[in-house]
Amino acid sequence: MDAHKQVTVQFRVVSGAEFPRTNFIGTIDPYIRVYLDGNILGETRHFKNQQDPVWEEDFFFDASRDEDGCLCSVLRLELYDENRTRQDEHVGSVEIDLSEVPPETFDPIVKQEAQFYDYDIIYKDEKRGEKLSRQGRSPTLRVGFLGSIPSWNALVAQLAGWEEEVGLLVDEDSRQLYAPLPGGEGAGLYGGIQYLLPRAVHFKLVTASKHHTGLHLDFRCPKARCLRIERVSYHQHRKRLLKGLRVYAEATLTNLPLFTDLGRLQLLASKRRAAASHSVPDTLERTGFPTDVTGSSLSYKRVSRAMAAPPVALLDADSSCVYVPVGNPASPAAMLQLDFGEDSGDGGRLGRGGGRLEGGPQRAVLRALTIKAERSEGQGAVWCGAASHCARGTASASDGC
Image (tube, rainbow, N blue to C red; front, side, top):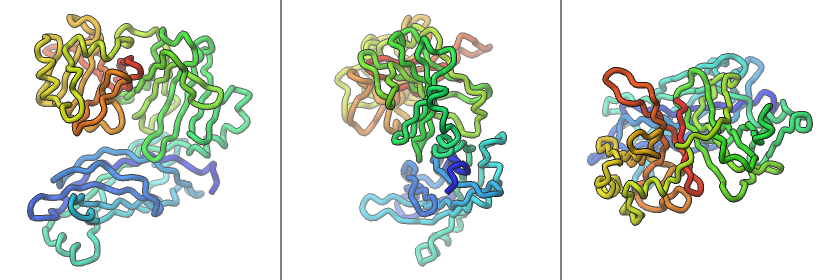
């Protein structure tokens, strides 16, 4: 396989429509398993009783382009119905021959755009499939291709020999690559990329300077939608990212579509704003956040009841969110959002010791929201949020919208 012809593709399972009923009691508890050339990439979230699910979940994979620019791989998407008492049922599938997708969709050199397609789900060829087809529904699956970039192997091959000339740092095991930024020598700034296939490709901005407390690390990209930036500070000890690079702080851009013109991506280091350096535990404690809420006690109802007495906390029962002002409650520059209405995945949970609250069936996603100054007629301030990781009690506000 020629490394130079390899690309990393961003593929999205968007939604499903008209899924069949699989039992008399409920409808279907659907999820999708994604395979590339017979190898599993992963599976989507599991929904309960949902015939028209919306996933919007991304998968990243490497594939080779032929002489015409087409990909030489096959995607297979299998629809399953989750069952608690027996084995999950394989309902049907979609097979996508990537060689039939227009080659410009996967060309990292040309300007790319997101491409979306609808595919009919084919039931299993057996009596069960015939029974499901009699319901008269036409199940479909919407998917999207959100661009491509050179694969890790292709990128390393392109940059071979540049290590000494530009100070490039490469780690094959973790698939991370960093380069010192021009003009950022005094701040010890490095820009980088990390391939976390099959679920992500992250863009990084880190500082190796012990004077990092005065810096606010950020990203800008013209015409891009809201940028989700995760910031972590290591106040006492540097973190080793790879050999030759230990950092005090890092900012990670986690949701940039691969069709974005990376030449327009800006990495910024500016003077830290006051709102970006407040202690999360202290901020919550001042508003009455109950420190004994753990495990099964963690819920919007329990937390909002405890925080309702202080007038500074804003409660939104419709979205199951609690908003806590950062800094001066009368005119805060930012807010913490405790979102109990969204699946948190692996990060963003609250806690006193390191930004996490362990256990429990319900997890609050923690976000830092910047309040923009501009107002329009009949509207209040605009809140613009991004998911933020917290380390050793430090929150980071983002205004990337």
